[in-house]
Image (tube, rainbow, N blue to C red; front, side):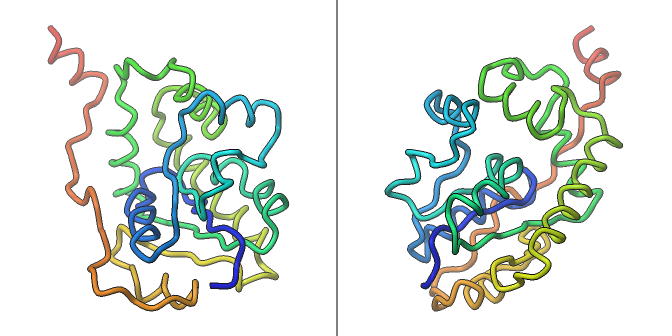
Length: 198
C-alpha cells in the first residue's frame, strides 16, 4: 500500500458503514461517524489535521462529504472512495435515516453535520437528491485529472473486493465483502406519523 490515508467521500447511506468494515478487514484502520466534541471543535475552527486520525489510516462518512478538498490538501497522496447508490434506494434509505420526529436532530454533532451537508434538519426529497447529484458532480470534477486517487464504487449495488482491492493494491481477503444493512425499511411520511400518534 503506497498512500497516505483513505477517505470515503460518498453521501451517508451509500454503504459507508460497509466500506468502513471492509477497510478494517484488509488492515486499513478506519473510523466511521465521529460525533466527539473534540472533532467538532476542530472542524468549526477549520482545522482538518484531525487528532483522531493520527494513529488511523482512514475515515468514512460525513466529514469526507463536506471537507474532501481540505482532506486532500491536508493529507497529500491519499486515496478517495466515492460511494454511490441508485436514486430511489438512496432516497428511501436516507428518509428512514432522517425520521421526521428524530429526537437527536438538534444534538450538537447531528445538527452540525446535517446543516453542513444538507443545509437543513429535516428530510426534503428533491432538495436531498439535488445535494447528492451536486456532490457527485463536484467530486468527479475535482479528481478528473487524478483518476488514480479516486474510486467510484456502488457498495449497495453489490460491488466490493473486486473493485476496492486493486485500487488500493491489496490482496483480496478470504472473508466475504461486508454488505451491511441491506434490508429496506418502510418510509414513514408526516401524515403516517400523525396518524400513528393519534
